Structures are given as structure tokens and as C-alpha cells.
Amino acid sequence: MSINARAIKGVNIGSWLLMEGYILGGRNIAESTLKRQFEKINGKSELEVFSRLFRENFIQEEDFKNISAFGANTVRLPFNCRLIEPKPFRYSNTGIGYLKKALSWAEKYNIKIILDLHAAQGAQNEDWHADSGGKALLWEKKTYRERMCALWEVVASACKDEPALLGYDLLNEPVLGERSTDIVKRLYQQTIARIRAIDTEHTIFLEGDIWAQRIDFLKELIADNICISIHAYAPLEYTFNFTPFYKFPGQIGNTFWDANCIRKYLEPYAAFSRKNNVMIFVGEFGINWRGGLWGELEYLKSMLKTFEEFGFGYTYWTYKAIAHHAFPDGIYQAIANNPYIKREGPLYGWENYICNWRKEKQAITAFWQTKNFTPNAALIETLKTFFEH
Image (cartoon, rainbow, N blue to C red; front, side, top):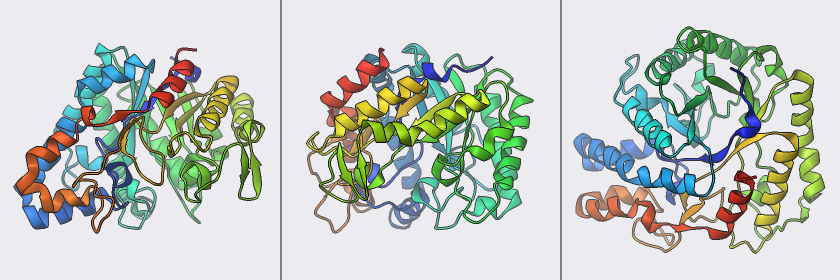
């Protein structure tokens, strides 16, 4: 089966099966760091309750109904290796239950799911979203790479017969630094072989170096039902709002960014697609929403038009988030301030769960539900127009 990437039009569900600081209104510390702090204050049994209640409330069946209603046909579902591997060298079906629940909801609403390993054993980059303590140890320890292969064997064995499964995104945003790309090529080759021994039907998505931007070295791995995945956030100073008051179209840093500039930015990926006869999937793109006053919709329309022109599939980052001053945020946003966001500090967002948990567990749990988030009507309408195109 060969994938038609241009048919993929959807969203990411970030922070559900891997918790991210900014998406939950706080600092970008690793999920494991937050949970260690939580356990120190509240105890191991309460940490288990906290983790379970978060997963039961942050995303529910109604969310898949919402996603279907605005025309999306695909969900990219990031997950943490710790969900499947609670202890070193020991794999469990406990977390598989969440993947299968999502696949069940997706089937009901005619949505396909791409399972995305967002945080691998040891971490594939040094950032919080790889659940890293500041080092990319996946590239340092062969045992971690072996465990990644074994994890995908567990996932493929459990999920390959699920009707809603589209495929496997092997590794989110690897960053190799000064290392040779040979290390990730070998890891991908080994993982592909072990998945294919179990599942020959579903698509395998491969991301390149430097946060899924450098892909030339992946051409040697292209085969039937392999898709190359990129992430497209440029220019970061604007899309992430790292420098306030930039507007699109307009001068952003040293470059005038407009629709033509976006096309030039994405053209090398289209050329790679044509030259190597492989589909391109934009696994992540998005923008920090500032009320639509700084050209956010114009930027997104230019991106989406270019994706359509080049035949790229795409999933928007992300479905749901606390409204934040930086980084791409949600189609659904928590806008009002409350004790679990607390933008005034001294603790921000999810770190407030730790100190409030025992007394306010019920209120925190209720707050996580999407009914307390505001849909971004303008963004939904824009995405819907392209999803239904």
C-alpha cells in the first residue's frame, strides 16, 4: 500500500500522552521533571491518580467529535515512551490502552491516526518535548536505541489491526548535533525492519535531523509506503512570537516574509519529493495566536495554499492549549486566568497542580476538560476551508 500524503489533513493532539509545559500554561520543563516534583510533594499513589485523571479528562471522545466536525480526517498523536515502558527494559500494555482508546474514538468519527513517538528512550534531542533532562542520550547509548525498536514492536503488535490506524511516525524531531546522520539512518533501518516483520500494511513516517528540517540523507531509506515528514514553523521569531510585534506579510528579521517567501521556503521539500518520488507530510506547523491582529490567518493561509500546491499532507499543531505568550498554541484555548494557570506567577501553569492537588483535585480535573476552553472560530473556519478542499 502506498500512502497518498496529500489526503492527510488534520491536527495534532499535543500534551495528552506527553505533557508539555507551555501547552499547559507553564515553563517548558520535562514531563518527568514535573512528575518527580509532584511525587515528592504528593506521593507516588497520588501521582498515579493525577496521571490517570489527566488522561481521562484532557482528551475525551467529544474531542474527536469536534475534530471531525471541522473537517479533519487525521490526528497525529504524540506519546511518551514512558507511557508504554514504565520501567527500564520492561514493556507494558498499560499505556497501549490509551492508544487503543484513541483509535476507537477515531474510528467512530471517521478519523485516521498517526502514532508519533514524541519522546524516545534517553531523548532524541535536548528539549523538554523529548522529555529530556538536557541531553540527547538516545544517540549516546545503544541500549536506548534497542529499546526504541522494541517499543515499536510492542505498539505495532497491539495496534496493527485497528481500522483507524494510518501509520507510525518513528521519531519526533531528532537532533544529532555534530554526529553523523548514519546513526539515525541505522536506527530507522532497524526499526523499519522490525515493524515490517509485524505489520506490512501501514505507513512509516520518517523525520529528518534538526527538528525534522534536514531530510536529504533520508533518500536512501525511501521505499514503498514510506513517507518523509517535515515540520514547518519558519520564521520562528514570528510564528512563536519570540520577538513581539512582527506582522505578516512584513519584514521579519532580515527577510521580507510574504506568500512568495513561504513558497521559496517550502520549494526544496517539493523538489525533494519530485526527485525521489516520495510524499511529504508536514507533521507540524502552527502559530502563536495574538487575536488575529498580526497577520496570523494570512500566514496560515499562505502555508496551507502552498501545501496544497505541492501536494503535501499536513497536521496542525495543536488542538488544545492554554493561551500563552509564545509558541504555537491551540485551536481550543484556555483564555481566562485561574489558580491553575496563574499567569502572574510565581508558579506558572502546570506547576500549580503540585501545590493545589490535594485540596483542589476535583476542580483541577474539571478544568482540564475542553468545555472550559474557547474554540478559535477564525482559525477553525480557515482550517475547515482547506480540510474540505
